[in-house]
Image 1 (cartoon, one colour):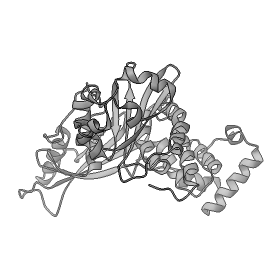
Image 2 (tube, helix red, strand yellow; image 1 turned 180 degrees about the vertical axis):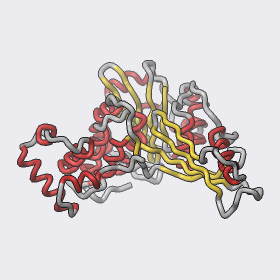
Image 3 (tube, rainbow, N blue to C red; image 1 turned 90 degrees about the vertical axis):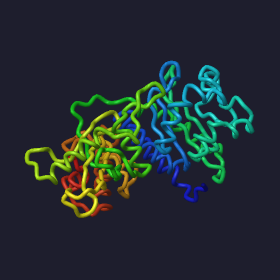
Image 4 (cartoon, rainbow, N blue to C red; image 1 turned 60 degrees about the vertical axis):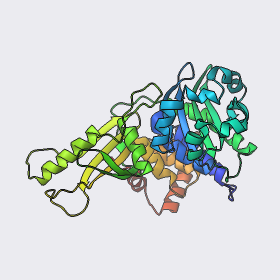
Length: 372
């Protein structure tokens, strides 16, 4: 995975740093962080694991297919993984010496041949495209908070010392980003984090993309760990069954029932599921083709960040846009940015020129995420 543009890491670092300073908390932050990391350190696979005081997994997010992610948590995490890997206690001195761990060189407790023949490699790592891995410890003084895992396949370029340095440079920002700023009745806004899956009339998921299964898992199981209870998506899902019932009731002409929409809010965000008939039908014929869209709505601060990061602006200009987007009436912009008032005015004029705008009101209106 060679990188041809030397400016990419600098831009990606700036985006990640600004993302980690939104104060939205770990679960809201991590899915976006994993996407941003692809620009900084391109990889096939990524996972993020929250760790308890004894380094046990308390929650987890993975870019692997949901089936592999659940298999890891059910059979390998905190159990069978120790057949080939060092235990958390054995890893303590390694973690204390370096934030970045080379999985093959430092975490394995067996030789490479034994590892490549193990169930852990052949059922979890190889299908995920993680033949070579780097683990980043996310910590605060005296405690490891989480572990960020990145993996590349055999055909990819190996990790280099520069990748390790980039990972080290963001460790403190990720730790900072996991802390949530106080918020009351936080507003959520639209997101491009959405997918479609097909459900049977009884609520069973029939066909779903990797992304749809991942979003559904996040919506229905807000905490994934080896000890947390889980729900199998192959079984009838009560939430999707409810949507299907509402859709059928509408087709049957029932009056007074709610539309086939379901909202669930948890640590990952606000999830909106909507059911539709696939193909022209009044619901009377025996069709089982019901389409359900699922969208992960995100905190308004994150939606604003996404919008600002797409603009052709400098880092300082983006910082100014974020401040204005959060508080349109804010007057202490120079103090907040640590700049002279004249410099802030220069930045504002530059933003207007680049975006073809003429006033602060026009800029603020363009920045506002859709919150309906």
